[in-house]
Image (cartoon, rainbow, N blue to C red; front, side, top):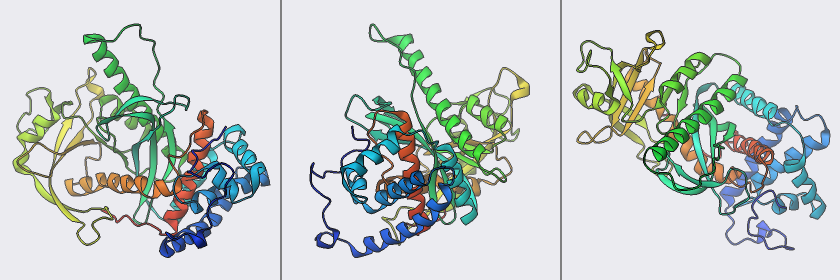
Length: 413
């Protein structure tokens, strides 16, 4: 059984000689060389938890294979850099059949990055992994709230390290909601209840993913950006407060909130939706400048949008649990409803720094799409969850090597 999707190389053939490849890009080759050099330094540190020398070497070879292979990564291609079918079987066992623990490697990776460049914020973002088969772990028909569309495949959550210099993932969790048997289609209230359950499970899985990752780190807690649609619920905000982690989270337009500023419309009027509150104070918006990280616009990245921050609380049956928050709204078009809504317990920050903090999610999104593809983050196709965790951990090391080598830059907002 192959652990990684075959990158298109026919059985029994070798990868093409890059020196004879007419599509060879010298600049990309130089970037890969820099990343592979950075990977050797990185692997020598983050693989210290692997007790056996042969495991550390296999880990290094796997990372180097991810960095050197163009396109989708295959076990055959990675093993081909080492040599022969025996190498493929050995590498397959290392990923899918071994027992080494990926958590210490993720912790070491986060520590290495923080020693290299000061952490700005943690960013949690979903990663949809389309899959057509029936046997891979976690595959189902799903709605991806981040993209706003249905897909078939796996849903994972990545926790990303972001700094002024780089962005790179250091923690992962696959969303595996409980599968309840259904004898007949759900309708009406039953369907609404199932949707509410799945949305709650989705938010719980995302929150657990980032809290587990951040708790492994050392030093002063940095803000967590939950760049996940509709995650700014009362339970999520309470979880982060209990964990002692400052957070800014996307919120649904219909989320009920209490206005706590007596000078603003709606104070004392009971719970109102986030969108209604923001629409009532749109006249108080101020322009905020930020930098678009999209590499497709290298000469036109300066952006300006309108934003406002309103002091609110989330309704809670227990008044003692009601905490002061800020509701942040952003408008890309003043004639329309707000394009982005967030809640945060960073109540002392002005609206400008808060909005720019949310733009770290754009940097992560671009890195996940471009560098993530080069590092093979989505390329695992085995059936076991441990194999997926080991692959995505080593792919994160490969991604970090690319970031440390400066092969791709996503500017600070």
